[in-house]
Length: 124
Image (tube, rainbow, N blue to C red; front, side, top):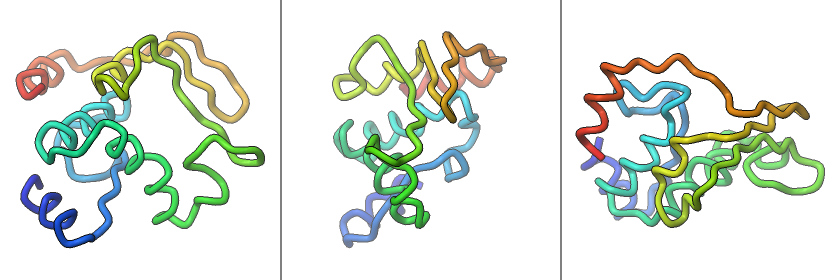
């Protein structure tokens, strides 16, 4: 996966991230890991990692007029975290609020697989 992503970027082939892409054991609640691994192992900036999972992903999915950025008239699903993910993508691990389809979810609860989490933390 690492070599493939590096070669794609080196050859100007777009790489986007999403919940159903390539990283084994990355779950819905754990998607931040894919962004973090992309940054750590591929060498992209935190900003670029976030861009590939939002604006760029929506563009290549044909949804850029609906989602992918926070603009007037677009669906604005988003999360709130206390730290700045541009400084450290691990900030995305601790989601405080979710805004989705016009609803607010404070401190969303997820069932965490501790075994998987412990093993994956070794790669941070």
